[in-house]
Length: 411
Image 1 (spheres, helix red, strand yellow):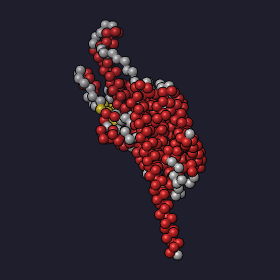
Image 2: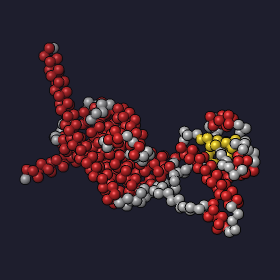
Image 3: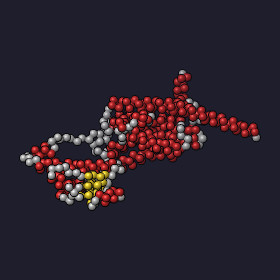
Image 4: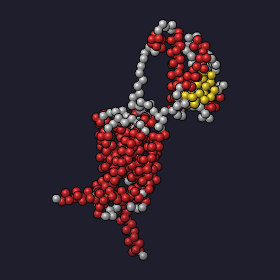
């Protein structure tokens, strides 16, 4: 009977702490920004910026030293493509480089003077492509357009010289090995569908850690030690403190996760292959792991600004370490081990495989198990560091009390 009574008391205390933490969240402007405003606004902003998916009409400068019908045909075909726009003609390469340096164009097509002569001699003609590599999307548009146009012109020349009798023979001669280009997991070939699903999951972790750390820093600045000083009977026991706070954060981020991972992809037509049941199964351990990770990190935050400097600094490296924007096989083993510390590494992988690649829950079983391990480990760490913080708070309060007594006795 006493065990049952203690359990009821613990749950009531956890509910009390949950209510107090919820009040604290909505009283702190910084916490409202990171818990609510950022998850609501940032995905819309990012998705709207990358909504076009690919770049079109990239300006290019042409240096035509051939001045022949074949070179002009190449220029017309490039200009007629969707990705490239011939914006300038230059007399030489130096003039074209000056246009690139002023960012008036993103690349140069250099057609040498012997271009048509070499082709007529049955030799290989060469067209040089110079690209601004500061943005990979423009480089891709310029290079692929030149490549496709040169292949089409080569196929036309090949069919003319082949002396074929039927149209079918010309097609086979121009393209003896036919193939079907089917882009997997990213039908539009766009940057948004490729990178933003991982960013949405990372936003959940980063804003959670930022909000929890901000509340912890505020409490320390107000000398309340993250509300761990047992000011009432409800704050006796680490389990009820961690549970009550985690319940508050989980309720807020259950709504934010639904918005980020279901509503935003639907609004901007990102790939959505997973059912809501599969997403729910993955997101529950992920959010719990992020919450307990944030609570563990928050005990190292002394001032409000510290957590912002830390988490904003590591946001971009964390995105790379997930293996979404950079191949994981090319990441050094040391950094792969570092990435295992963060729940986002496995949360992003599981979400992208489920929602963008159409994987089943059995295909992401490893990530699912690791997320639960993260949740359990960081829960134990949160209990440990909170207990240590209470010990430090009591020790500091005792020292201050002794100093006050000493001063009173001396006076």
